[in-house]
Image 1 (tube, rainbow, N blue to C red):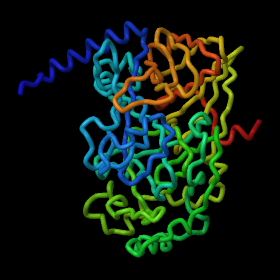
Image 2 (cartoon, rainbow, N blue to C red):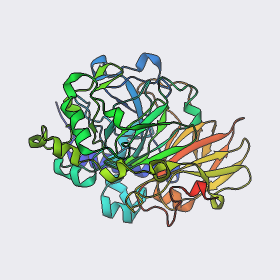
Image 3 (cartoon, rainbow, N blue to C red):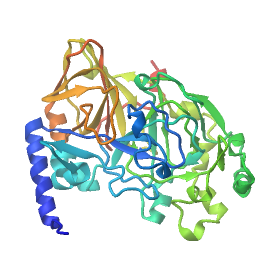
Image 4 (cartoon, rainbow, N blue to C red):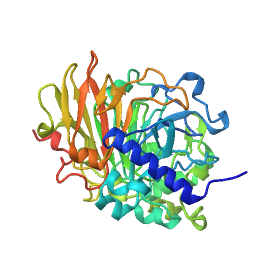
Amino acid sequence: MATSSPSKVTNQVARLVDRALDAGAGLLRLTPTWVPRSFLHPGKRIKLAPTDWYAYGAHRGGIDERWFASTTEAANEGRVPDEGLSYVAFGGERAQLKDAVSEAGDRLIGAAMFKQYQRWPVYSKFFDNMGPIPHHMHQGFKHAKLTGQEGKPESYYFPPQLNNVDNNFAYTFMGLEPGTTKQQVRQCLENWSQGDNGILDLSRAYRLKRGTGWLIPPGVLHAPGSLCTYEPQWGSDVFGMFQSLVEGREVPWSLLVKDVPKDKHQDLDFIIEQLDWDKNVDTHFKANNYLEPIVDASRSGPGYTDRWIVYGTIDGEQLFSAKELTVDPGAKCQLQDPGASGWITVQGKGRMGKLALQTPAMIHFGEETEDEVFITYEAAQRGVEIENTGSEPLVGLRYFGPNTHASLPKVGDANRK
């Protein structure tokens, strides 16, 4: 079978991206990216058609995630080659956003970010599960590097539009109860094969509230509850499950050590060392990690409101952030940001520049939609007109990469009004 040479493929991508950028004035249409998880149960709120919940096959598990503007591959066993990767669509053709950034990084994400990372280093997703998932953590950059990967700080926002029902357990266990010892966690790991290893006995649960969110540093244990979650995060898919049984379902040891060096798979002290202990036992965990939306008055005006929904820093670094724009029926606004962003429409219809925006009621696997856009660096700097052409509010979520904003709110600022 004949195959195209790398140079030919590269030229095809470059031509497609150039034409798409010119036609969209710097805006790129993205297609839905669906990701299954073998150990989870779909929450059924992210618009995927019921006939397609197991589109990858029942053995792969149900689809309970949709990834946005992703150049990060999903680290699933048995995955398809492009799992987790977003595609740019234009004129009946498609190209991976990952390749588009490689070809036109300065235009898409800005010269400074492209020079430093050589990729779009973040992504976001809808995470939609029927019940809670295992108490787990994402490795920090130091420990992830041992397996040739990157660490994964992340954040949560619970969009009201995708949370008409709570599902089974709208509470998230986060961190460890202050005073917990490493020996207690070690005992839980030693009890792994005895059923429920009791790790949740060492944690505390927080009730999830629509329209709010959390900042989760790497190395912090968390067992996300059953609200559908928008999750801006670093471009990595590392994790380690610390809970052996969830809703009667076994969690294999392999998911605890998935991203641990092979010679450390039975080294309990090393596994526990991956935890950021001080952050886990923080006596003011909620105060230091909980996010309420904050109106950005400088970006709001008559008929439209821009709100910070993810903000703050991770160990002093601005790694990602996110905003929610609401435009009233019949209103329009000029959206101008200092950097690129991935946009997903969660309510209403309208237009962004020359691209239509429409929130679908149902999406079939493989179907293209009009709800997702990549706002490139050049379009963000120039400004994009957004207009609500419908009869209900037009609402979109957009997330940004590292060091995009000269300043942004700090965790806790919403309570300092």
